[in-house]
Length: 162
Image (cartoon, rainbow, N blue to C red; front, side):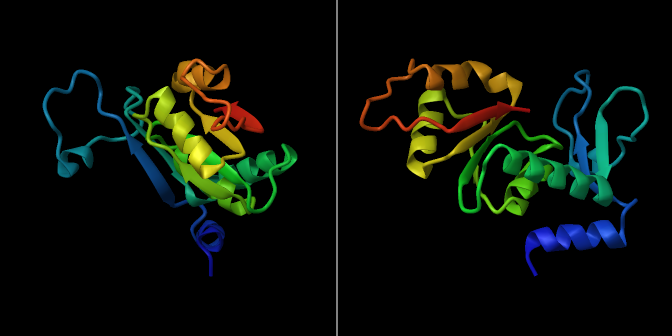
């Protein structure tokens, strides 16, 4: 059984149970919080500090992203790079890539434009999914402002922001 089959199975067995939780402490919190203190942050406070999705929604979002990739011409075995902050959307995108039959290439959000370019070239990525906060870095890569040599420059087929 593959990991994507486990997701589908959990969506069928536990559709309304929480699968993923994103906790973002409010900006007024000072100091370090422990995992026990994070557990005290409740959803529905109006401060938008806790987001969660069910197994059904997780599977649905992964399927939608897989279908999106397929509609954009991504084929089995092609490489899709992910450049996102740690967020609730990361895993549905990752699972969507797997469900489409592509290979996920996670990138560290701390990378500079040059490091991102290097990793994309090294992995021979065909598609890049990135968050809006990375637009500046991606523009530098696409338009060659980060020291691309013609021998190492491998243009991406496609790039998309989420």
